[in-house]
Image (cartoon, rainbow, N blue to C red; front, side, top):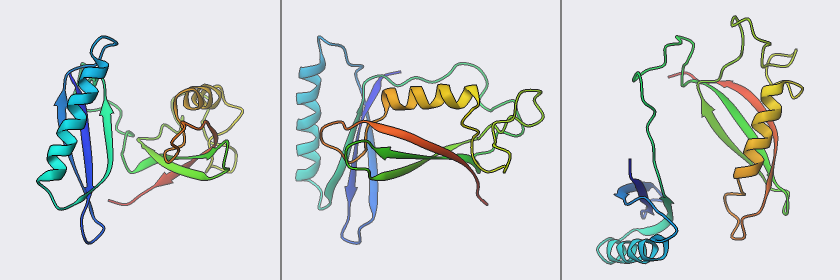
Length: 162
């Protein structure tokens, strides 16, 4: 699948709307030219709209997993999630984001992911150690200009009603 360029605009009432454009996958050889084209697209969109660009996102390569359209596990529910709590290593600012379909490791024969209190990911679990390392290797503070590193502090099990 190709990558995409996404523009999120804020209206007068402080509501956000997003438009996503499929774009060519990026390579080292095409990056600069594609960036220039994306900036031109943004400018032309801004010229014909009244909203303010709140953010843009450019994904160089998007992929879709092969196989079934749905999870085979009936416990895979988007309402059950991990609330990831992380902190900017420079400013100390705390952020959260939710990951759907939390696997609690219950009934699978594996070691449960939850701590004994049953709400927080057990930080001694091998899956936590792996998640923390991968998260911190990729994620930066979402509002930092200089790609400030973050530390994953905890993952809290959350359930939401539909």
